Length: 80
Image (tube, rainbow, N blue to C red; front, side):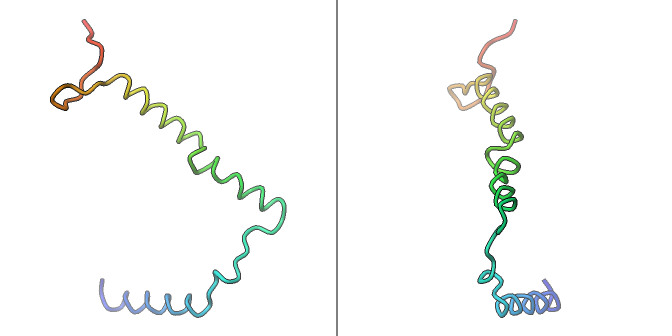
């Protein structure tokens, strides 16, 4: 990085350290806000549909492949 960007980043860091926004942050206050944040895991986390589909794909690929004696991956069932 150059000196200009370092000084800008340092200034921003100092401002944040002076304001201390983490001390006043309380999270959601309303019932609706609390409900919305409680559903974040189903949208973005390990409970999401995309995560479940990716995990299922990985599991099926693991069943379709087996590791050979020399560490090579090959189909577990031979096709003729």
